[in-house]
Image (cartoon, rainbow, N blue to C red):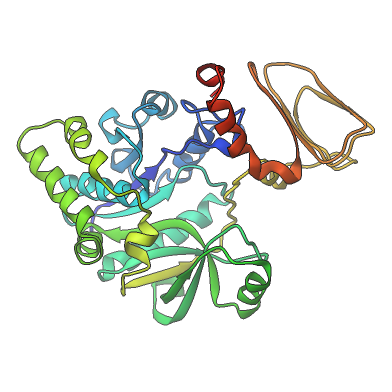
Length: 363
C-alpha cells in the first residue's frame, strides 16, 4: 500500500467572521464552533489515520507563525506559507510537489481547515475508503456530502452509476458533473432526485493521478510544478522558489482548473455530519438556544430579546434589551452589530474598514 498523506489548506481570511476573525488569526485559527480552533479540530480528526509527519499545512506567510503555534505536533518544515494567494489550483500544485518529494508513489487527501465535523470515526472511515479508491486506480476522488436540505450556498456533485464497491461495501460512483450554487427551486430538484451531493472541497488522489490531470487540463500549473522541482533540485529554498514562481500564476480554483474538465473523477458518499459554517448565522446550528431562541457565548444578559446570536469575549458583559434577530460579536478591540439577514454583507464591511485609518489595528 502507498504511503498516505494529508494536506490541509489553511490560508483564508475568514472575513465573514469579523471581528473575531482577523488577517493574522482568521476563521480556521479561531474557536468559531467548539473550544479549540477549527484547524486544531481538523488535526484531531486525523489522529491515528496518518502519522503527524505525513501532514502538511499550506497557509500564507502572514499566518504561518500562528499556525505553528496552534499545531506544535507538526514538523515546522511541513507548514508552508504561500507568498501570495493564487487560489486552490496553485495550492494543489504545491501540495503535489511537497508529497512527491516525500514519496513519488504517495496518495494524499486535500482538506479544508475550517469545517465542522463531530463524527470523527465516521469521517476517518469515509476518508479511508477514498484513500482505498485512489490507491486502486488513477482516479480523482471527491467526498460527496449527502444533502439534508435544498441549500443554495453550496456547489453540487451529480453522481452517475456505481463504478465499483470498496472494502466494506461502500459504493464508488463515477461523477457526471459539477454544478454551481443553484437557486432554491433547482436545489429542491437536486435534493428530491437523490443523485446529488454537496461539494465539500475534500479530495483524495495519488501524486501520479493529479500530476497527470494538471498536465492534461492545466499546462500552466503543470509547468509550475516542474519549475518548482527544478528549483528545489538546484538547491534553492522552498520560499525562494515560491517567491519566484507564485506571482506569475493565474488565480483559479482546482474545481475550474481540473475537476470540471477531468474524465476520471469519482465520489464516495459521506455518512458523517458536516457543516461549512460559512457565516455567523450558521454558528447557531451548533449551540443550544435559550428559551427565546438566543444563542449566547460568553458573558451575556438578555431581556425581552429573541433570536439573537451574541458572542462576547474577554469577560466583557454584553446586554441586549428588546431586540430581535441580531448578530452581536464583541472582541477586545472591535464590536459588530448587524441584523442576521445582513450577515453576507460583513465581508463588504471589512472592505470598508480597509479603506479607513483603522485598517491596520482592526483587521
